[in-house]
Image (cartoon, rainbow over all chains, first blue to last red):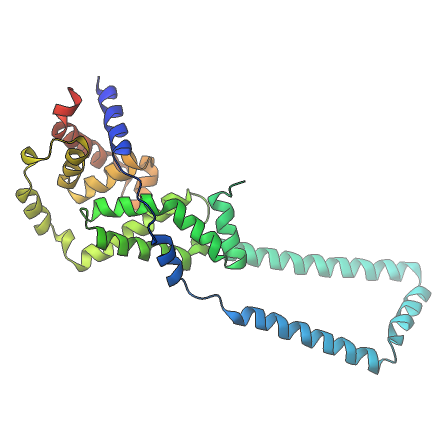
Length: 110
Length: 178
């Protein structure tokens, strides 16, 4: 009997509560939100331009990217063991950096 | 396909997406405003101001939403904190107004309409019972979730819900027998 009464009460509490029409409430809240900072976009743009400029300077100074060809030739002439070692070191470096970023992000989320 | 609350939160975190936040506000505004109206004893203007403050705080602290509880539960907690802070400022929690309000409102003089009687009966409950009943019975939170929202022990929530329900049942006894 008590269970039936409780159900009746719960149902009345839910059903007798009217849905409140938005009536501009959401717009008023969004209006008061802090503006998106333009600095994020601006910073990304500056970073991109600096990278492009740096790359262009490096290309010109290095005599049309000659150093890349030289470097590949030098790596090609190395013993196979050294190439494997360099690849392993690069792998460890990248994995460590990625792990550090992942841990940092996870801490921010928690 | 409609995005879940968690997906909308992810969009806000990733891209500060105002549209995603607006969607969350649209989804939850009715329940949050309804809860605050009941807590503020149908002071519509104050309730809506507190609801706006609730959503603004939610936006500013969105990174602290860990997804362990439902988004609505997290919102109710912010809403209740907003209400409590405001009530503290207005000295409502002292209890003087509570007793005075109850003395001024005789349940026997309530309007015969069920909704009116129910709302009237709810308003007569003390704040701690009203909040617990609204969260658990009206908004479907578990006792554990309500305890987190109200920041009180689980046993206290259960007691408050039980007492609040008993009082409501007594106040609405005539309707139940119909």
